[in-house]
Image (cartoon, rainbow, N blue to C red; front, side, top):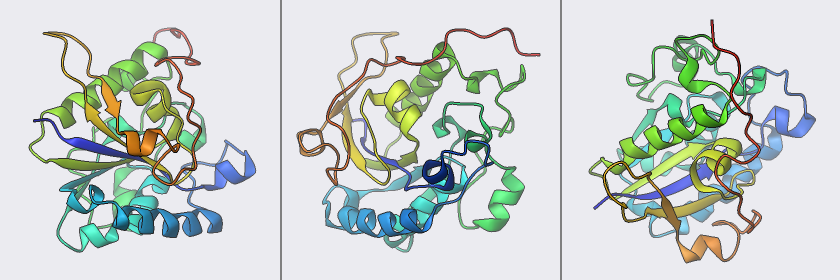
Length: 232
């Protein structure tokens, strides 16, 4: 049986507050830290979150900070936290490009960075082309990310990621800062069929686990750019 997924969007970061997307790999704001307190309390009260056996985070600073602020109580119990480049944000703006793993690991030790794609944080070259800001690349990356989780043995997995990728690539759902949603994998349609998620009524009906997000849904891939010129 594939795992249940608790998908979390990071709390407010500096670029969310200022709309300055030139900030490289921004940190959480003071409000973001306050949002983490509410999210932490919500997760502690969620029976499924208490059963989580693995935490996956995008290797970006704001997602790592959110994870460490909100699921520290699981980490203290021995739940492993692992960084995965597949869950990074979509665009190639500085705010959505990560920092070198050596720098991030020095700032945030205790996270398993061993499986982060060595091309990180490259998103534009031929080598980093799977992370490009195109509809095809983002949908393919989302499918790869879901496939890895589908095949894992854990019953409940928490993932801390980003609104654009979660919405346009993975779920079709809106995620506001520091909100979460719970999903199961839908039945597979046969060999080669895409991985699809079905949201739990508990988070669908009220617009997220904390009720902070829009209920409307979008088509996967919508608002993503078409193909770009070949990477060099």
